[in-house]
Image 1 (cartoon, protein in one colour):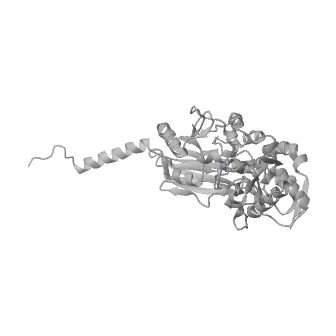
Image 2 (cartoon, rainbow, N blue to C red):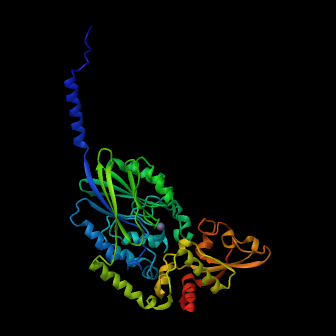
Length: 445
Ligand SMILES: [Zn+2]
């Protein structure tokens, strides 16, 4: 029997095998990367009533984590603007000025960064001394709103491709006029396209996405997107979401937490081989504030203090969102004489604390310059969200008061779940309605 000329002795096969593995190891290696991240800071420059957050404290926590860290990058996940009097009065500008002290390496936009209009959102992008990337906000010609969809960060020998994404819900989360000619293209598909283009130029792809929970799950299922730093849902995650070697993280809003995701990245697979995630509580009672940030916050807070740090009433207890919703609706009814009022829970941006109430608290609850609007409808035409559990005469006329945001987005589940209702009456700022109502009450029991 002739021996097979292609047959090699076992020792030779083993030698070739080990040479092959060695060659692989030359190109493939495991390197560490630490991603520090924040989301939905919402202009809460000073600590909340629970003493968490405050920009100077968030920055102190960031600097503490970065001390001696050679593989750290810092990402922000949108909705930096909107949420406090300074932001409302100065249309978000001071917030982006202060954000330049955070040391962000990259960020994306959130829906509320459009609250002062698309031109102002673009102004924020220009103000930022770090790249703000978003891949799926385009005008009717397909031109991106931000200069770039992605950026590549070089850290610890790794090239990290950071792609920005905005939720597909953007159109129903703001007034149409704020978006002008801009709209979103499908978030997952668009990011997938950019990720495919970018993959050969980097060792890891990270999506910084201001996205809904269902989009989070969709991103996590994408084979080519191993790391997602998310925002938009304010609650934060108890633990990182994962799908095999893919990971998604998100922390609490308003600067209450800073996230720290430590990854071991396989540069051949371009994916993490392992990771750990922790959330760092930003407790202003235990942290020495960053003095440069504290000084700039004070400059801006001093400008609004005479308007908002004015005593309003006293509250015997704290009111959470469900009770506050009822209080706001009573205020809207008092302002307009309406039979019914409706405010979407997402429109209420803070709780009502116990103790001395200031005008500032009303601003924190209602930072938007939304208006109270009203219309008159037959009982049969009223939306179920306001009539459920109540006796309604289908032929009687009823007055219904809502915010102009709810009127403009009335078909969404968060609002009236109906369409075609006209609200021709206008009764001033929603915030003023709340302030007047609380001031007249004097005491909230
Ligand atoms: Zn958002």
